[in-house]
Structure formats: structure tokens, C-alpha cells
Length: 556
Image 1 (cartoon, one colour):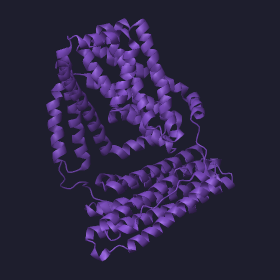
Image 2 (image 1 turned 120 degrees about the horizontal axis):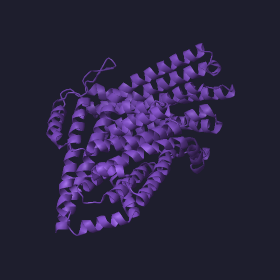
Image 3 (image 1 turned 30 degrees about the vertical axis):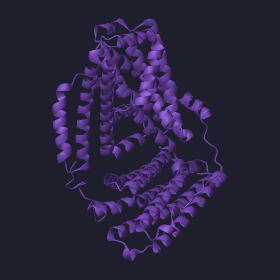
Image 4 (image 1 turned 30 degrees about the horizontal axis):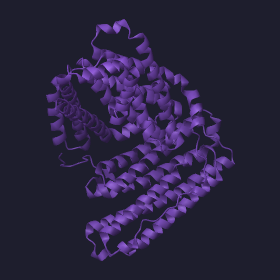
């Protein structure tokens, strides 16, 4: 019975810790999602990218989340391999520093954090401040969970079972190492795994040597999470997570072996065991930063391990309409069918958009032809939607259903218009660039890639908003419209500066560069129109501008 009680107490503490970590991360993502995405998309020096990754991991409470974010941008061409790897390695260090902060005994702050966080969440009139309250409450719950964990372990510290298990881990560092890796993977959080280990070691329930092996194993486990979650992604998106697994996982195994053979430095023996664990974790991740020197050879290796999939024109996926003519006499079912069809159109447009920047670099007539074929899918879908909508008994539909019908048809038109811009302007510009052997400057291509990445990202967000009718997501889309316009202006100004500086590549490709940037912005304007009916319905859109208050009168 004592073991069952202990396991119940321990699982409750661990699950509360996982919930609290996720609560903080979700609150930050909702409050600052677009800003985080913009931070990733700005490629700078490796040191600066490491610093960005460090801060982002501390904000998101997870180095795996940073890796997944970077992987997504790498897949869309928004970030290169070496800058992306630098950001991921910096994220690992940021996660270690976050663990150090949470390892301090800060229980006295719990009532303050709960009071302030609860009041902010319940009383704030804006969505962003509500998320600030959510984050503060989440931090308080993390501290409560750690205290609860220590209290759960304390009664059985001197029992027969735990010392036997602890002694086995101390003697067999490989088992302890693999246990840490498995725990981090199963919990999907190295932060929670290491905090739990620090708490147990601090109580003396687990030897320091075993704790060090578990912590280093958790470093391996945290690198497996993004590799597993991106296993079905394109090769370019998988390379950075795999590189992080190879570099950090190998380093963790080497470090665990070396510490088992030679022990820890004597200087660490003067501080408590829990502080030693935290110090080892931070020192390990600082040392791993030096592995960015292997970035270029690692990129070459992974290009061979994970080559780009060859394009097969004949393998173009079939696009089956979701419209069901048999539902036209039941408006609720008909609108659901229509919504699925519009979402399919958004998916088709995303497929069309994905290879665009590759075509600008290396024009392929077969790939371009496939995109033209998919534009015909969009055209056919819009024609079918018009016929389907005309068959609905609008005279018998309530006003809210009529508004929904108009919004869905309008967005289908917007998606089709975006597809036309892609095939009639952008593909023609890519072909012209190839035919005339024009070259973008490295800076110019990076700027266009950022615009393309922004469009791809917000097309995905628009699909989510289309499914959920999420007010916060709709506001973020319109905020991103202003950001897209700012990026287009910035690249235009930067391009003119390059012309003034006598950049030959910029002179030759000037028209193509400017027209491409403008067309990407125009496509983005169509894509974000999904937000308009949601914001208008909630009184959030006045003369095509956002009101200042995202959630008027909203409560928790």
C-alpha cells in the first residue's frame, strides 16, 4: 500500500509539473506568437542566433519547441542549416538556465504569483494581458509541483525499494543514462525531467552520480522528441533536428562516460548535490555550443543522409472535392461540407506555394507545370462552390448561416485569386529570371525568402482560423498583414540601397525582385481576409482597422 500511495503521489506531482510547464508555454505562445516567429526568421551571425535561441527557449520553457519552430522555418526556406543549428544549440542552453532558475527555493513567491496572475487573468480586458496572467499562474504551479514532488519522495527515502533502485543506478551509469533519455521522451519535456531529478537528488533519495547520468540522458531524450515529431516532414525540415541529435546526443554519452570514469571536479564538492546537477547541466550545454564549428560538414553529411526527394510530376496527389450535393437541403450540413472544401482549397494553395523559392533558384518546367495543374484544381473548386452555394435554400436560412455562407464563398474567391497571382505572376517571374540568367544578391534572396516564409506560415494560420473561428488568431492574422507590408517596404528600400551601391546582381534582377516582393504581399492580403468576418462579427474591425480592445468585456 505504501508503494501504491507513493506512486499516486509521485504521478500527481509529475503531471502537475507537466501541466504547469505547458500552461506557461501556451500562454507565451498566445501572447507573443507572431513576435516569436519573426525572431526565428531573422537570420544573423551564429553567435546572435545562439542568443536568440537561448532567450526563446527560456520564454517557451522548452528547447524542443525551439527546435520544432526552427525546423518548420527550415522546411519553408526561411532559415539556413547553420543559423538554424546555432539557434537550436542556444535553445538547449536557454533550457538549462531556466532549470537553474526554477531549482532555487522560491516557494515564498507562490502566493504573490497566484494573486497577481489570477487577478490579471480575471480582470484584464485584453487577450495579451490575460495570457500574462496565465503565465504567472503557471509559474506558481511549477513551484507548487516541485514542492509537492519533494514531499512525495520524502516518506520513502529510507525505504528498501528506493535505495536499492538508487544504488543500481549509481553502479550502472548506462541504465541511468537511458532512463533519463526515456523519461524526457515520454514526458516530452527535458525541463520537467531534470527538475524532477534535481528535486529527488536534493533530498538525498538518489545519489549524485546517478542523477548526473539521468540528467545527461535527458539531454539525449530531448533531442529525440523533435526528430520523432518531424519524422514525416520534408528532408530539409528534418536535417536540423537530426544534426542536434547527433551532436548533442553524442556529446551527452561522451560526457556521461567521462564522468563515470574520472568523476566530477573536486571544486564542485563544496556545493549541494542539487546545485552540482544544475552546474553540470549548464556546463555541458555551454560546451556543446562549440560544436557549431561542425555545422558546415554536418550539413554536407545530412544532405547525403537525407537527400531532397526527387520531384515526380506523375505523383501529384488527387484532389477530391468535399462538397456533398445531398446536403443542400440541410444548411448546417451543407455549410460544414462547404467549409471542408474551402480548407481543401487552402491546402492546395499551400502545396502550390511550397516550391516557389526553389523555382526561383533552379527553374524546373515540370514542377511549374504541376503548379499550373493545381491552379486548375482551385479554379474547378471555386466553380463548384458557386454552383453548390446557389443550390442552398438561402430564403429559409437564418442570418447567421447566410453570413457564414457569404464568408466561405468570399474566402474561396480570395484563395483562387491568390492562386492566379502565383501562376500568372510569380511563376512567370521565376521563368523570366531563369531564361535571362538573372541572379539575386544573397541579401535580396534572403529578403524574398522571408516574405515567402511569412506567407506560407500565415496561410497555415488562416486554415486554423477557418476551422476554429478563433478571435485571437484572427487578430494575429491582421497584425501580420501590417508586418508583411513592413517587410515589403523594407526589402524595397534595401534593394534601392544595393542599387545605389552599384550591386551588379541587384541591377540585373531589379524588376523581378520588386515585382516578386509586391506580389507576395498582395497574395498575403488575400490570404488574411479569412479574419475579416470573424473580427467584424465581434465588433473588432472598424474601417478595415483593428480596434484597440481584442476581447471587450471578456472574462476568464
